[in-house]
Amino acid sequence: MDLRVAVAGLGPMGRGIARVFAVAGAAVTVVDVDAATTARGHAQLREEEDVPVSVAASVAAAVRDADLFIEAIVERFEAKRSLLAEVRATVRAAGNDKLVVATNTSSLSIGELGVAYGDPSRVVGMHFFNPPAKMRLVEVIRGARTDPEVVALAREWVAALGKTAVLCADSPNFIVNRVCRPLYYESQLLVTQGMAPPVVDAAVRGALGHRMGPLELLDFTGLHTHLGSSETALREFGDPRYRPIPLTRRLVRAGTTGRAAGQGYYDYAAGKPRDAQASVLRTSQQSEVDVRVYRAVGCTPRDVAAVTGLARQGRVVVDSSDGGWVEHLPAGVGWIRLHGGFAEVVADEVAGIEPAHDAVDALGATSVPVLALPGLVVDRLAHTMANEALTLVEEATATAEDVDLALRLGMNHPIGPLEYLTRTGPAEVLAGLRGMATHFGDPRYRPAPLLVRQAAGSRR
Ligand SMILES: NC(=O)c1ccc[n+]([C@@H]2O[C@H](COP(=O)([O-])OP(=O)(O)OC[C@H]3O[C@@H](n4cnc5c(N)ncnc54)[C@H](O)[C@@H]3O)[C@@H](O)[C@H]2O)c1
Image (cartoon, rainbow, N blue to C red; front, side, top):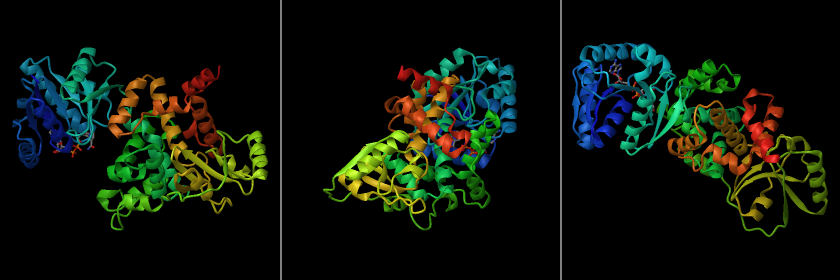
């Protein structure tokens, strides 16, 4: 890669970014305000990869002849603003008008940083994921005034690193963190509503194939970081669906911010989240019971009458996540939600619903017990994520292809949220969201207008 790159900030991100460019053959210069960090970062870079990286004494020295400047300094607008002003002054003095200025910011506006730089056409977002050496995804963010040629160069460089770029408009939380908003909110709300964290995480891993459950992931990232991006989303979009969960604030205020703090949704002194999740799973036993499974997307009077009729003839279970069943499930009928070989089994003493283990045994599924809450766990999380993903497409923040690619590469999800939407069908996802909206009465479940149109289109 024939490129001169200057990287400012030698925290974990700056160091990782410098490393991937150096490994790809670029001439890399690094600079950090803190002399000790610079020395340590430089030594680490040499040790890790033994690739040549130079240290500059000043920002001016680093950017004078560079093709690309990437800032990965602290996430504070004022710090970034003064750094960018310094870069701009050097570029002007040195006549280096080819310089592309990239920012690795997770939450600040690319347009605003462009104005801070003094030439928004040269500023682009290059949002690497942690750790940059391992993660293949880079979100390339175009500010409203970024030159298309600058965007094209950023994408080319990402490809030359052997990574995949997805293109995103300058919108809060970009793609991955935005689509995951509901995943985080809903999993925490489930805890507020009485579900144990290991159950939520086991359901998500078992049914959706995520490598980490959402609460384990929140603990890993740090609840304070999550709370920060929730506050950004709420402030920037002004939409109550993004409001933080009170429980998150309580945990953050108490200093129980996750794994690094020793406690968050899990207590790390007591054991690993994986062990806690394994303990709530139930493997099916051999069974000869004859069970009829009644699959219902909703809970209409016709569904209830059909189930009541079937129950007179033998053992029957409803396969549904519609919240209407909490009030209308006939006595003696079981309630499950099947996802291939994995089942959520409603076990709710308060609502008087016994777990239908016999049915799950007959179906040969691994299961987890859940409370009788609208959407249960899996559909609630998957449908709200698909809705958020579709909102991004509707507002032209990103294309459907890029949204799916971003979630697969950035989160290791086996399928993207829009592919999930296509497989499940927009009508079913819409019905699920409307059920949640009715039963919870919260704007979090408001369907995207595009989803309503898609569902109508699929019916015509
Ligand atoms: N940590 C993540 O998971 C992650 C992921 C994607 C993006 N980001 C973003 O990347 C950036 C850096 O993240 P991090 O976690 O490595 O940060 P960090 O706070 O750990 O490190 C920042 C470094 O920048 C240095 N610095 C501060 N002001 C400077 C200046 N004016 N010039 C040069 N160096 C300066 C600091 O001394 C420190 O070494 C932030 O914008 C962050 O939002 C972080």
